[in-house]
Amino acid sequence: MSEPLVIGIESSCDETGVAIVRGTELLANEVASSVEQHVRFGGVVPEVASRAHLQAIVPALRRATEAAGVDLADVDGICVTAGPGLMGALVVGLSAAKALAIALDKPLYGLNHLVGHVAVDLLDHGPLPERFGALLVSGGHTSLLVVDDITGAITEVGSTIDDAAGEAYDKVARLLGMGYPGGPLIDRAAADGDPTAIAFPRGLTSRKDLARHRFDFSFSGLKTAVSRWVETRELAGEEIPVADVCASFQEAVCDVLTAKAMDMCDHYGLDTILLGGGVAANSRLRGLLQERADAAGVTVRRPRPGLCTDNGAMMAALGAEVIRRGRPASSLGIGANSGLP
Ligand code: KG4
Ligand code: ZN
Image 1 (cartoon, rainbow, N blue to C red):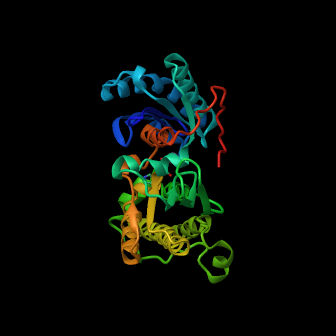
Image 2 (image 1 turned 90 degrees about the horizontal axis):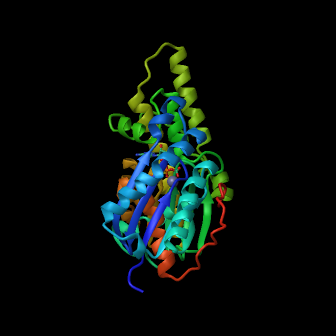
Image 3 (image 1 turned 90 degrees about the vertical axis):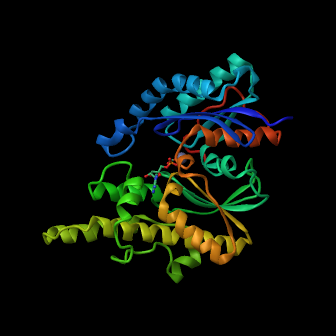
């Protein structure tokens, strides 16, 4: 088979994404975000997200098809996020994908959103290596993975035992009154701060914790520590040095993420570490991982920041791989699975 031509559809949270990919080439990537509608609530409101997906999905599909300049009759498969994510949001993308699959008489592939965050890098840096490690950091998940086959053999060797990294960014931004989503705002504010100003805790790094949770993460203690630090200053009537708080918080997050990712590479003998998920857009995380990987002789792969947050390209990239490796299509009766592991 020549390089598969696939449509990727993503609607697990607040971004409606439709992309078209041929093999490892990104032909179109349309993303419509409903983030503005959630700002005043300080987080994604599922019902609002579902309605926004309904309005955005057909126009996004039309724009993607036009931008790619392809005939839909030529596609080899419709690849869509089946989970994890918000149930009502997932159902919109999945229904659109099923309708397309029926109308075009093409196979449907219901795929895992989190694996899409890893696969998307092949659009920027070509085919994935045989075996590699991945640090997956998004708004809902934080995991260390050993990937032997992106279409199936993926082992989660560690994950967060409480908040995800993105969730911690969003919560800390909220308590500093910065807005939503917090990740990009803290990233920007931290640029003017001193990362050594405040010694915030590094979760699950004590000798005792490492014995049980070597590759796991915990960010809720860090969030509480930031909250207490800020509260104490506020009660004393002191000004909050927001940039320093952001930089010190960010340093604590990125220090633990990169240290454990490098420890995984060392332990499992991995010579490549791939960074994926929304938090992978973070400038300090990208820089610190590169620094530590260089020192350890490990190759870093990370997609451009624009492909780190949710989009259709990640599902199309994974779908192209699934089709190229001849994996079976999904049944048209496949349901959304909000808790897909
Ligand atoms: O992967 P994603 O787009 O959606 C999920 O699947 O969850 O990740 C969204 C998360 C949010 O928590 C957002 O604050 C965070 O990614 N994020 C960032 C940055 N850009 C997005 N966190 C830190 N630094 C950034 N530059
Ligand atoms: Zn995501």
